[in-house]
Length: 195
Image (cartoon, rainbow, N blue to C red; front, side):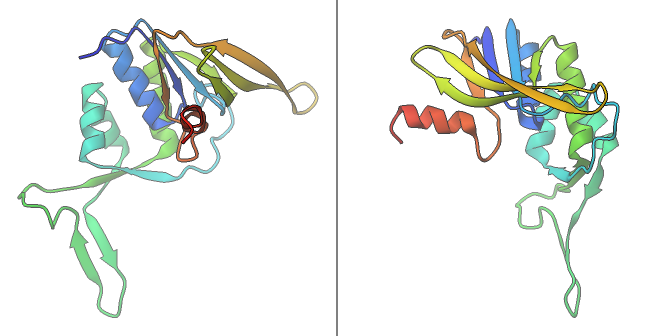
């Protein structure tokens, strides 16, 4: 197993947060998460709309490794299968095509609830957060990442300002792109290789 002392994670959604907890619990000395949105922990107003996501057995296994499986199951609704509403409704249980007799469930949870739980847990593990930092460039030669940082001012109305910040990324550490399907991290890493 590779020992990781330093890791910079771009993206503070469920995947990036779960990875930050796993690394911290495994003994990484410095784990930083950069995300373009605000912290859910510090929002006084409603989170807005939250999309439900489903968690399968693999996700539950990862959550179990960080001690959160039972808590997530308590916050979730089990889904035992899918139903097609045709002239004659058809119900197909999840896992019915597997060679196992085990019951197979997916668990549905509000994305914001899961993110809040993971963010609080990561904070308690000592993960360093940089919210409202949108990645705009990675330079692998200099070991720097450039972010557009937003700051909200709420005196007499909402004013949003932004500034550009360059961050040195320790070359002895790792950078992980957990910034979604349109990953800016991946775009720059593959651009460096001409892909």
